Image 1: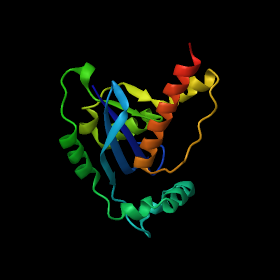
Image 2: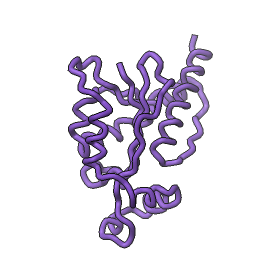
Image 3: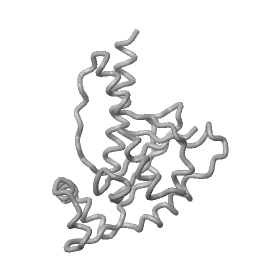
Image 4: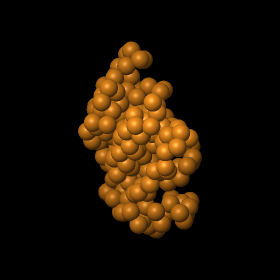
Length: 179
């Protein structure tokens, strides 16, 4: 089974009201989850200022994605329909529901909710299951692990790599501390 490490950046927290700004995906085998290869990374088109869409954005989002360069990248980004088409070409249809690609990442349910709304055809190719690194980190902390430092890059590719690194740390911590 394929594991798709996925991260998106958005204009807010509500998939019904907010938009996807960036998406990245790395692919791995479930049996070797941390050996992931980046297969997709693209900003989504979002217009430059001034534009009516900017009036609806929270100041926190504006500051964060201006500082990290995402809004600048989005000016030349791809249309979300084009991105969905490219992802459909990358991720084949799998009929056996037990073998559908499973999403992995930190708080991956959030990302999956946006995929369901903004890329419904792509969402149909994905399992309903998740490998949520945030939940695994929380479990490790409940057993005595120290909190995990977050880089807070808020760029999709960087956040995937951070999730993978945190997953590896959890694996080692569990192996060394729960016997």
